[in-house]
Image 1 (cartoon, rainbow, N blue to C red):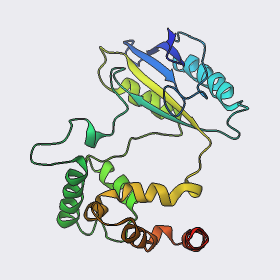
Image 2: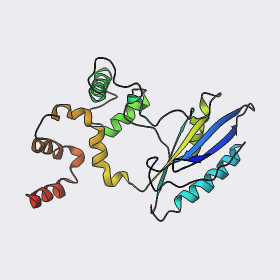
Image 3: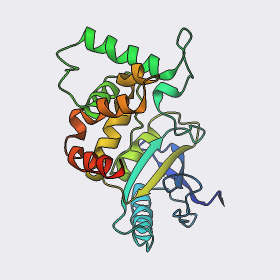
Image 4: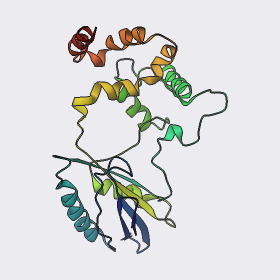
Length: 228
């Protein structure tokens, strides 16, 4: 089955007890409509070794790209192909009593820090904090991915034996180091609830003073001066 600008792979992975766990693997780019998506030939496998051979071939094909030099491949496996790529905090919509997911997120984080201050320390950066919260089962805006396709396969086969699982491959040439302040700022959104009605200049002054923008501060300040 092929469509939506993606290559799909229907596979059958054999488990230890001989039960066949249905897995559907989708190869995608950064989103379904990204022109960088490339198709992977449809294939059926019935053993781990066949899956590994298919993955080696697919990774090789995806890595050879004239549009994305030095691509980074990330993998996600989930046990139902009906699951959407939505972080846990957003899967049920905005809970009753909250006007937004952002305020719900803020309450979850503040409550976690109050309950376990020695674990969810104030010295943690925004992304590290969310990763730790996710690890301990707190709903967050993060979506788990891995650099290991076998780990993705494990999660695709782990539960829901009567349903098709799904493996999604993301291809990007982005690097965390280059855009880390942006990612940290997004992860820190709950901390900026009180800035929603403030002037942009006030918001800028607050953001530029945050620790994760320290390396960009001179460049941003120079640009602001040049544009004035």
